[in-house]
Length: 255
Image 1 (cartoon, rainbow, N blue to C red):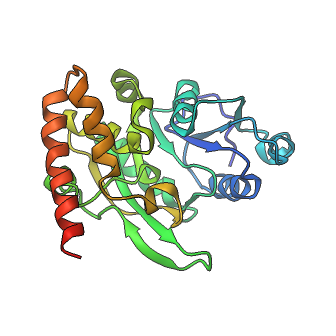
Image 2: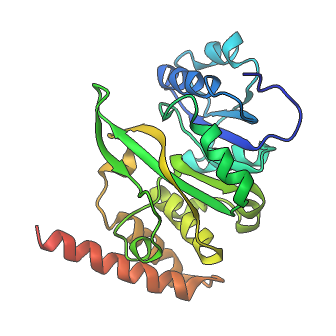
């Protein structure tokens, strides 16, 4: 696959990394194995000191766009990658994450080209260290109420976001810490429902940060911000998050 083609790619894959040389190599090999689809790969390295820079200078990364500098955290780095992207859609596949198989992006491109959705969502498989699928993150069919009530979150590793809408919405907000991905998905949802892809897009490590936090961490952080500041979607965000927090606490109390 030649990712150096200068025509506008359909999909920009953005990989954020810091001191995860081996995870980055796995992700890069997964991206370069994709067949018959127009993509570009942008790697944003947060000034790693574990030998990542040596890998980035190797032939394996010769067709990738490399940004290597200090950042203000994972979502700041993801925004940097998005600003450098030329693709119609953005996919944030971070260091250590893998695409499901060699035809994943070909399958996704069929729906993206046909329907031209503002965003599309698939499933992320959460993997054990032994390579077993432990659980699925996301749903085969997106349900607005299920997301709204906090029963399901959207895996950013399996979400294709139209780059022009991402820019209009301002990308990830750094105010929300690890809640930033779900807050951005909700702002996309306020515009339109996503196209449900119905298949696994990514494979991810089940020990990631968002897999181990308190279920009320996302809504509590976002609600704290929106309660104290004016926001174009503030009232609806507050109403949504109030329901999410209520459901999350109720679910914990029943255990």
